[in-house]
Image (cartoon, rainbow, N blue to C red; front, side):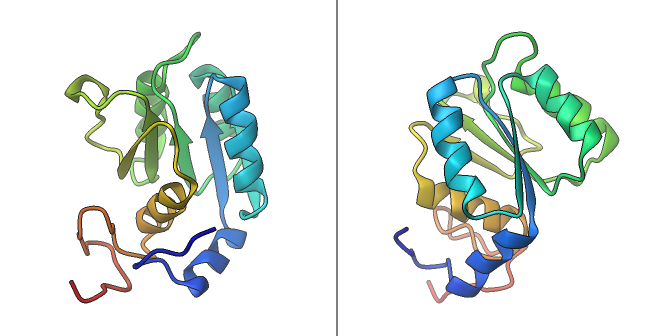
Length: 149
C-alpha cells in the first residue's frame, strides 16, 4: 500500500483493533475489497445487501460501516438510516459509483466514488475513526494529526 500524506504507519496499526461492516452487492468488488480489509482489520463482516448488513450489525460490535448505496433487497440509504437510529455516532463511509447529490448521505463521514482506491478507503476509515486528517479536503476536524498545509 502506498502511504500518502496524512496517513502514518502508527495509524495503520489501529486497523488491527477495529471491526468493519462492509456492504456491497457486486460479488467481485465485495470479495476483493473484503479480502483487502480482512488482511488489515481485526474483523470484517461482509454482506451483499442492506438487509443482510443490518442483521450482521445487530449481531456484532461494529466500529465502522463501509457501504454501497444502490443494492437489491434493502438499499444502503435505508440500512444507514436504521443503523443510525440505534447508534447515531457510528462512522459511515459510503462507496458509490455516483457523484450526484441524490447519492449523498449527510450523516456519512466520507463518500468514496467507485472504483474504490484502496489507499483512499484506508484514509477514509482512519479519518472517520479520528486518526488522520481528511487529506482530500484538507479538513482537520476529528484529527489527532494535522499536517502543515
